[in-house]
Length: 155
Image (tube, rainbow, N blue to C red):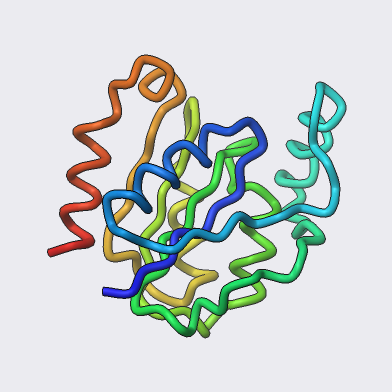
């Protein structure tokens, strides 16, 4: 199945998980590029504020067309109990134009609302979801969850 793994990562956590998923699936990858930098404490605060207000980021033009794939796996960190604003922008841009989807999140807490919002924006229910908590990622304890997620996508 031709698969694209799309993600945004401010700290590298979502990028790490995206890379692992892409490797397991033999998938292409697409990093969502936010034109505004969110580094440091001020960037972190601005990111949380924009996520709370659900203001889509100004993102660079994606290099890969998701319509050319059978499955698009979309990953985001959680900011203020919501998806990152670059992923929000991506989903709004391609709303109703995505093939089958799956979602993964990296977070340290509340995430359920994000999965529901992502499904609404994508216009379809995900084939599978994966939630990787920061503590699991740092300890390398997410491998079994990742394998289960990939198994659902392959099956």
